[in-house]
Each structure stands twice: as C-alpha cells, then as structure tokens.
Image: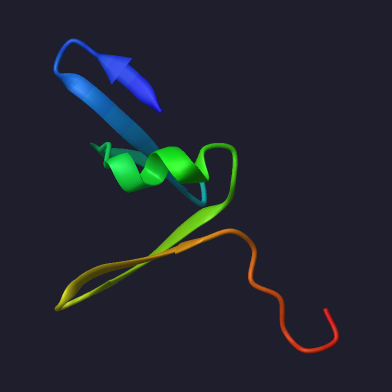
Length: 56
C-alpha cells in the first residue's frame, strides 16, 4: 500500500511494469500476501494467496 496526497493505492506489478490502483478495504486482510487479478469484460477477479495444484 502506498499513501499519497490523493489517497491510498495498491501497487500492482506486472513483469517489469507496475500500476497504481485505488486501495480497497478488502486488500487490508491480504497485506504481505500474493494478490493476483484477472481482467475480463466483467471487471477484475482477485485471488489472495498462493494457489497450489495437485501435488504442490
């Protein structure tokens, strides 16, 4: 989380790029964890934590 004059933001990293998105209270529970998002025509689906496959 970053706090700027214009408000709080989450830093989203993608490869060697990053963007700032408005902070959401639900993200407070996920501080320090991996948060991933999938963008579609319906919006963004967020997943918190590391998902493991079978045998992982």
